Image (cartoon, rainbow, N blue to C red):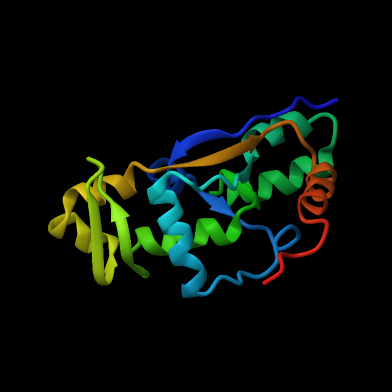
Length: 175
């Protein structure tokens, strides 16, 4: 029996340093548009990003599978050898949104709060790297913002596939 894992807050900066991949066996294509991204960035700034991102620690799963499930071990090892350390089981769109914002490929506008709790209105679409010089305390708020991450480590490939199906079962959200 596997242990219950509890999501932990982690800064976005730390999350984006993890070398993650979304295996096609688990993930569907990315579907978020620009209109979907801004509310998520805003929710992170407000401390309301409560949807957990589920990651799989490749190295720890390799250790778990090495003697028990050699075929699963080989699959994890292939990702590890390619330089990845985490598989994205749930949260691909959220992670891609964060990465595009932090890499300066996507900008936001609207009402935000800086690191000191001061409201800031961004009239024009602003990329994160621009905030570093124009509004360093808002930049700090984004860099140090937290999201919830659940990290799995004691699963084989078949268990992960079943978990992915469980997470994504049911009906999609209504409009």
